[in-house]
Amino acid sequence: MNVIQGWINLYKPTKISSFQAINKIKKKFMIKKIGHAGTLDPLAEGILPIALGKATKLIPYVNIRLKTYIFTISWGSQTSTDDSEGEIIFQSHIIPNFHEIKNSIKYFIGNIKQVPPKYSAVKINGHRAYALKRKEKDFEILPKIVFLNNLKIIKHEKSKTTFIAECGKGFYIRSLARDLAIHLNTYGHISSLERIKVGHFDKKFSILLDDLLKIGQRQMEINCVKSTISMLDDILAYEIVEQNDIKNLSFGRSIKINENLLKNSHSRNTDKNTIFLSHNGNVISIGKLVGNLFKPNKILI
Image (cartoon, rainbow, N blue to C red):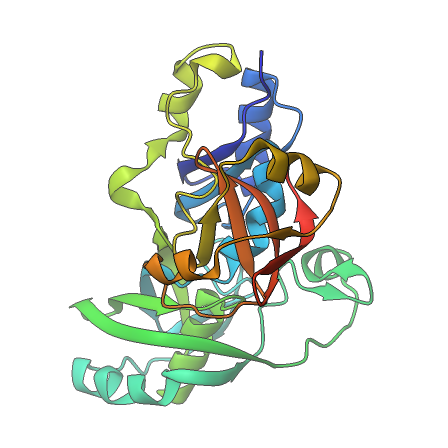
């Protein structure tokens, strides 16, 4: 049996970590190599892109895609984890109204400085922040530049507000809740969080973890695996046909390609320093194009 490779558009439930989710899939289908793009907290549910086999080498190209979240901020209290799982550390009687919240959104759009939560996977001197926090170690997380493309209110009640946000890599919705509340002279934390999109991984076409685990026992029975190239179409790509080219690539050799065929790509990206070569729908190499010469950096054959 050929080793399976490709993507699963998984919908992760709450009360389970991203690692636990992929571990269940790994054990069920006896998959040797598996990974995921963009960690979801146990409290959060939603889209978790799963890479199988050699597709794991493509995870960095999914992580840079925009992600869409629907989330609710409960006003009046801040917790140790910035979500409802933590202990309340600050409280306020100030509850912002709809217009105050709407007028504050503009200050968080674009490239902004953000300090990740102390209960997060950010590394501090080689150690995860959440691990240091659990050991009650004293440490500081420096702010970093993150990108928020869009933020809209979709429902507002007296003590909580639901939003939809589209953000870039490394953005923490929990930090946004904390910082937006402070900007409004109060406190706040995330009480629900759902990721509905990661690049081309969309909730509408996802499979629930429980449904996936019911499919069967063997890799060949997984019928929801997408080809490695299918979820990466915002790139410059070239389909390889000649077996001799495939052979040369397998040895890490450069090959000549017809540069003009790249112009037929639907990609908005024209960076020739990152070119994907595919064969039968799967990425077989990543490299750069110099004139009509493709120079491989990664081989996935």
